[in-house]
Length: 462
Ligand SMILES: Cc1cc2nc3c(=O)[nH]c(=O)nc-3n(C[C@H](O)[C@H](O)[C@H](O)COP(=O)(O)OP(=O)(O)OC[C@H]3O[C@@H](n4cnc5c(N)ncnc54)[C@H](O)[C@@H]3O)c2cc1C
Image 1 (cartoon, rainbow, N blue to C red):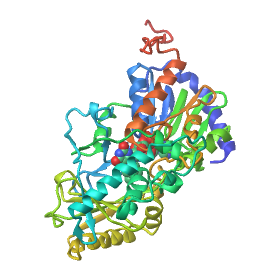
Image 2 (cartoon, rainbow, N blue to C red):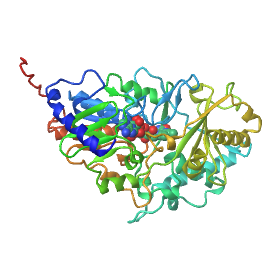
Image 3 (cartoon, rainbow, N blue to C red):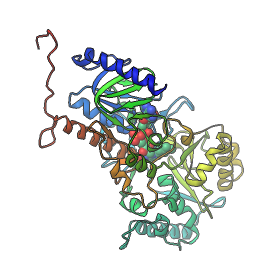
Image 4 (tube, rainbow, N blue to C red):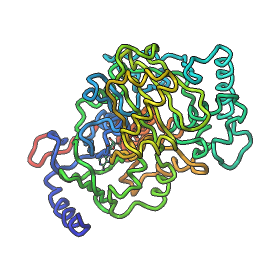
């Protein structure tokens, strides 16, 4: 749509807005209308924000581009006929994770703390396990120790260079597997600031199923990619399904979507915000999912397997997911990006090769069905999780600045210590919603909700 037709569309929308000015909360979802807060993106941040705005009795609408909610935290049950988390699966730090606390009715259980190590096609010996554990401990300590550094540098420089035969595996674990990027592409400051992931849990029904449950009863418009946001005078959101006027917008799309041309800002997004989003570009992380019935690898439920690798061309395996026959081969970072660009068949071939080298050639034959996610190609994500490059850690703060008193950003990329996680996205969404409510004067001094004033209906009696 040209900007001329957008302008005329906006004018007619503004003219029509009086009709909505006195309407109560949008009951029926769909079409055009007016709300207090429009939230763009129904992932973890958007859902948390919408819950907070709705709890304060303000009119809210979630607009989602995809045909389902959840964004990068979505559980599929159709591909394999069992829960398959296409994105997030690990519920980090469940004791403090806000989603784990809201999981009533779902089966949340602790993830095993042990890992299985392969050296070639055999299990690691006890002595090798001991060396590995000592190396992991050293690496963890080193990654949090910035010394007296005043200027940022690549996180790869934090990692000790004498991690014995486990250097490659630990580089993979600390960089690509944890963040989607190789350590050389990550800010040491950002890395050191991230909170430790000391424990984890899984949801048997899927992390995405948990998130979807938390979105029940929220007003959501699906299949409605926002294509333009007018934020000069009135705030207006343009989608192929209709247009919405709002007093405030919370934008939760990924940083890669923000820097793409998929959403036109009128006037354009300031360079400061665009540059900040660019400095937080998403890393690459994909699951290659394999259905392997009968536990042919002889592994435990949710067994996490690493190989002793000599370079970045490696992966990890999460076996027998929640006791099912689903196995996830995790590929990430620079190598994961190259592999995913080659397409799903190449990814599945790699997974077969990896299994053969770690468990012998019969392992590959036990694969009955397969699927690979390709998040870099997903038009509504364009990658996996935000990672600040060296020198860019402060970009997260820039995105916290509201625009024109009308637009707030939220999402995993804005969380200072839990970036790249569902919990971080959730907290960021809640914080953005509270910032909007504060702007509306809807929170009292202690941060609690003030009751919403009810508008008089023309000719009405309340
Ligand atoms: C493969 C993978 C594995 C991961 N593993 C874990 C894990 O184990 N644990 C963990 O905590 N985190 C994990 N993460 C990260 C986690 O999934 C994300 O940090 C989190 O889900 C991001 O939530 P969000 O709300 O910030 O963004 P999103 O989930 O991306 O939500 C943004 C929403 O905006 C929508 N959108 C985009 N464009 C438009 C538009 N034009 N109009 C309207 N809507 C639009 C998108 O469809 C999406 O629903 C993983 C991510 C991936 C990809």
